[in-house]
Length: 278
Image (cartoon, rainbow, N blue to C red; front, side, top):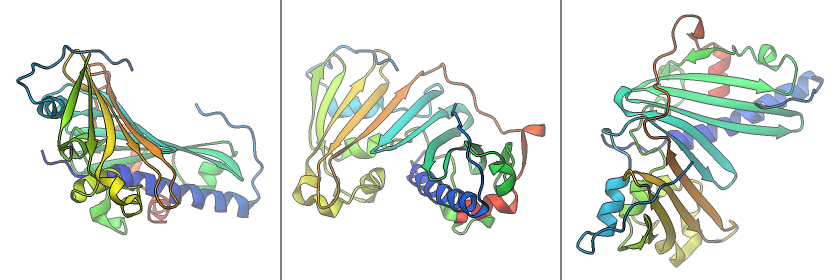
């Protein structure tokens, strides 16, 4: 299926808004603060035959709908997303943890998407009674996209490449096979909206000419699956040098995903939409 690019960026944005809302609410209520606690191997593959284009080999290693379920993580600066993709069910789970210092609490926000259906679960730790204060249940909440400010921005299943590695790899003029399953190339972040969305937190214009040759390293495991891609983004303008790291792992070992049922789920209350819409 065609990869939509947006859910990861949406969740990072929503989590930032939600944390700010929670912090303001906790401060205004004068809550007492308590101490809260919150709760990948890569293989190697033989070097590609000299007659095989390394770029084609690398693109073929990107997960597709024929792959078994797997786990993933993406690290973009200080933001880390973790989750599971279940291609057979057209399902994905994506989570982000954010910590607030004043007042001190931790928010774990998890979305589960099956096709165009989505559910949200929020877990708050560090401040007694914050769930009740925000009127947020601890169960899964079924979302109605019509109640979001921008329904087109609602988290939905986006395919099997949540880190948008294929969009990055495609921009490389050449890819070099380094042996032992390692590949290297340079991405051109100015080549279209797909790659720009893949690095949505980067000010591409500020990078100038450097945006056209951003080095990356990728590793393909012995099973032929892409296990990691690291994009080394240089400093530019006011932004510091950073790395975008995508990892795919536990192929065939990740849990299967299904719609929450029974007492695991309820309709999302108005408070959930207030949180999501900011």
